[in-house]
Image (tube, rainbow, N blue to C red; front, side, top):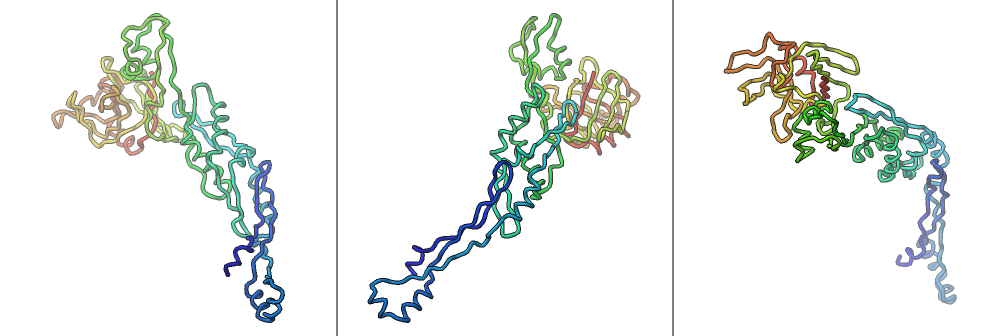
Length: 364
């Protein structure tokens, strides 16, 4: 029994490997094992002859591999490996979807494969191997756009695994992000005007450019990424567009307009900021202590001041002192302190429909 491991050779099954994006077979190799029972029987049959010979005859038997060919498995698997895949990209700032291509020559290079018994090949995706493709994908985006590797790698892995029958494809798109920008100050510019032009609440632009009190033509200021104002996962198929000039709210689902309502936004001394925001909070009733207002069905969309917890958002007709309704006859005029006033019937529908993460685009 102690001699057996010295003579045993484990057989090697027929396997698979990748060559040029295709699976090819690796050949089987037979093994061997010491046949203790046969060796012992031979000794017992003529022990004197063994002693006279001065050596112990060993009987070695061949051990065939369990899998002698993977050719049929490879033929079926290779059919899956010739397909160019695609996926969806989504830019929440523009609201546009686009398509990304994933050639077979790229994604098959991410794979490892081993036979799983005689009837199946088991694939796995090496996520580290996805990185070179991310560089290629990033280079194809518009200037100033980028994708997050920690989102893209599992997303693309899921695309490939779905093609291999290992799971379901992701339901959402891969989100596009935006870099900070620079703005050269022109004659007559003000920080408040640039904030309105670039879609940032004025204090956010101040925070991004500390120490700038007076603008000088030719001066370069930082415009933060608009993604800063979209901190939650984005709801792709819903979008709310507010027109400050028209005092209108338009709701869109799957690209189709479903609502158009007259609303009211902030007065000139406390305006509603243009920009791209999203629903971040939902409260059946919110209290604004600055103005002693109770705001029904409140949905917060942005903080006017980045260091404050107070948010501007949607709400129905507010009350003060427990019963007094404000602005009930003012829809279509700028009357709020920065929030977006929606009629009571409409705010109920909006509150039920508007998920956290829904994008809100406010245009001048």
